[in-house]
Amino acid sequence: MQNVFLKEDCEQFINRMNELKPDSQPLWGKMSVDQMLAHCNVTYEMVYDNIHSKPNAFIKLLLKLLAKKKVVSETPYPRNLSTAPQFIIKGDCNFELEKNRLISYISKTQELGEKEFDGKESLSFGKLTSKEWNNMFAKHLDHHFRQFGV
Image (tube, rainbow, N blue to C red):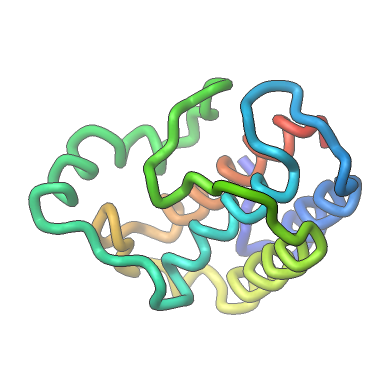
C-alpha cells in the first residue's frame, strides 16, 4: 500500500495521473476519465471543503457497520464496485481542472502529514487513524488509476 503522507509516493500518484489524457478510456466501468478525476476529488472535498452534507446518525451508523471496514482496509477494491450517490458524477467535467484539483489535494494531504489525520473525523465513518485515512485515499486513487491503465 502506498503512503499518501510520503512525498515519493505522492509523486508516483501524480506521475500516474500525468499519463492520463482527455481521451483515455477505462478498462472497466462507466466513467469517463474526466468524471473519474472529479469522482476522486469528492473524497478530498469531504475533508477540505464544506460542500457535502454530513449523513444523518442512522446513515452514518449503517456506513460504519457495513462499509467502513471495506473502505479503510488494505484490501483492494474489486472492479465495477458500486459507489455512494454523492460520488456519482454526471455529465462532462473539465479534464485539466479536475486533474489539477486532484494534484493539489494530494499535495496538501502529504504536506499536512500523518499527524494531522490521526483521529481526524470522517464525514461518513467518524474518527479514523492516519493509517485508515491513508488506506482510504491510496487505494481509491490506485483503483481508479488502474481502471484507466496507469
